[in-house]
Length: 451
Image (cartoon, rainbow, N blue to C red):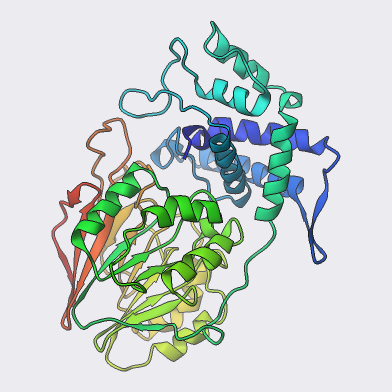
């Protein structure tokens, strides 16, 4: 991922100028996708841009420190339009062979400009606005001035956004149900190992470090909790996810959950590329033996919810047969840190099973953190969403329902960015031993037991 694509100010400035440029272009308006379907690319981009600005203003008013969760060169909003724009922007930077800005000491963003070097403003100006005397005296200021005028946006770039965004906004992929799919209930041995990693689809050094650790352990199964950046396009799935996936030696042992980022482009990369590759017939499944039942859920197709008929299917699956049930999803059932997140739809769908005591544990991603919770809402729970994307661990006092937060810093980046983590589940008939591994080896957290 090009760091310019993750620079919030640069992305939003370019997005705003591109929208304004597109509004003056002949193609502005609804685009036909065939079959009577239309999508208004400009309207969707503009609505997303305005929502991102409103979300930022709301966070500021609530005294939320954005730097606690975002880095200046790793901007990842939960906003479909911005994520789609980032995907198009990132692909265009790659096609144009754009250079990277020099990193600051410690890895925190772009450094001051040296002779012959390009900063983010110059790179953006050269690639998206038509050039700005790179490397010359005052070039960065010249580039910034050039970018202030939307009329300077390169018409070729605006056309690329139009053509690619209209495809990414074309609507959702068909949702395959268990009635339509072959058998979605998979067997596992009574004693087996399962690696679980979340929010891992970045293809960056952290993701590759996690993959190397998983390959060393050689688990029998691997579960990805979702998120391929920025919008889960087929290109991103192939180049940032499957390319580095530490697949078990035996095929059919990998599983992937759907998520908000995969669905930002309609889920086509997830349903048409990831699932066939993993030989996974649907976006929800069970993996079980006679003692334990692992239940994978799709909370991404409908944002932070269970698209039908998953709730009804759970009623059929969660029979009182003596097995303990552990749920896996991308979105969280609750959070100690994202207190404004609305979990109500997901909670409502699973409340009957919580009330009946049929859910033993739950592991999810979405938040870029590694958090182990004390028993809460009648279950054991783990948030495991720090698979690769740079983040800063919270600095607030640990909430009462948190047993452990992996707050370890990157060993080579003292400025900020927490360590990246996955979990290994060692399953036996009597218990599941949970071991945490960071990108460079075993975590400091002692082993945990679910029994």
